Image 1 (cartoon, one colour):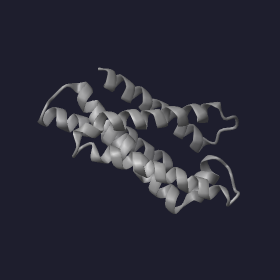
Image 2 (cartoon, rainbow, N blue to C red):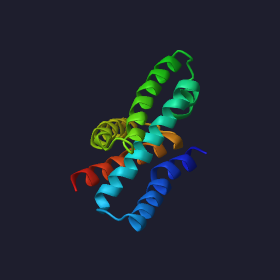
Image 3 (spheres, rainbow, N blue to C red):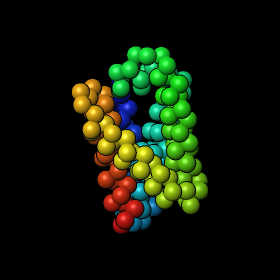
Image 4 (cartoon, rainbow, N blue to C red):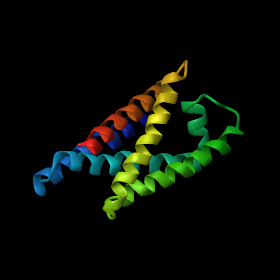
Length: 148
């Protein structure tokens, strides 16, 4: 289920949105890539992750980080609040285009740091490996689209 959600939010939905808008309205490809990867990858993914972390902190603590101590759940919930804030900024970037670049930078920095942390952690679970690959992948996409 986690892999399916990542594939939809980080690949399928952004690519479909780019294709539809390119066919309907046109526009520079880099701008469309930035717009839709910020909306889906930063907005939807981090927003949904934050919601899950706030309401079910044990999932992140136990499934991704293999921490069974219930005390860790408070920290995961606080991470969830940050993810909700990043997610909201990404979602609002459709209605408020001035949010686009700040959401890309903030979300990209978050993903870069999280991806590097995952990469450096020994004994990664399959779920953490998926998180690492998708985190670093979106950093590359956001960086290239923002520069172009």
